[in-house]
Amino acid sequence: MPKIRNWMKRPDLVRQLQALEVPIDVTPDDLLPDEASAKLRIDTIAETIETSAFTLSSGATGYMISLSLTVMRSPLAIAGFELSVPWPTKYMTWLPDPADGNGPRNSYQFPGRNAPEFPREMVINHRANARRNLRAGTYIEGLLLGYGFESIPDCYRHNSYVVGTLAIIDQFGVRHSAEITLWIDRSAKRRAESKNAAPRGSLFAKPDRRAAS
Image (tube, rainbow, N blue to C red; front, side):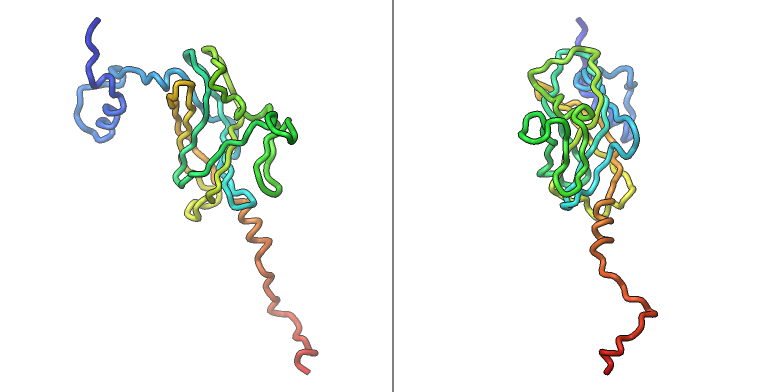
């Protein structure tokens, strides 16, 4: 068996050199496939609004990602999810399976007043199970729902977009990652600011004669 050259084992380094336009005698066909990415295909689907970061009534941030996952090679089990966005998400968590709690068992609901709610069959959070091996060809489609205590920084305006990275963690701790584009939805904050704004007096309001007397 011929010996594999070191650069063939480091496709990430080769791509960095190519991005920096460093002259190298390597083509994409020369690179070995990334074992992690070859086992799971990650795609975002559906409308833009369904893959978004949005402000909750409490000021926290909700995350909704419309996904399709395809198992390319087995064995593979989904142990968890991880999302990285341009701002800190130290206290981010994924919504728990409603079937495991004492409340309604048929819907996922974000925390807070008038928070969005989704039927359980539309959500894939509960598909994470490190003990459940998925066969090659398995297709999973639905919404991934989570929230973080940190607010969306003011520099990210309503109706803009940011790029984040979603990682699917398998039973061996291997990360399968893909870039995702999130729509920024600050509607809840804008409604709250509008509601709390003090009413402005009319320039044509009549003076109070009783106060003048």
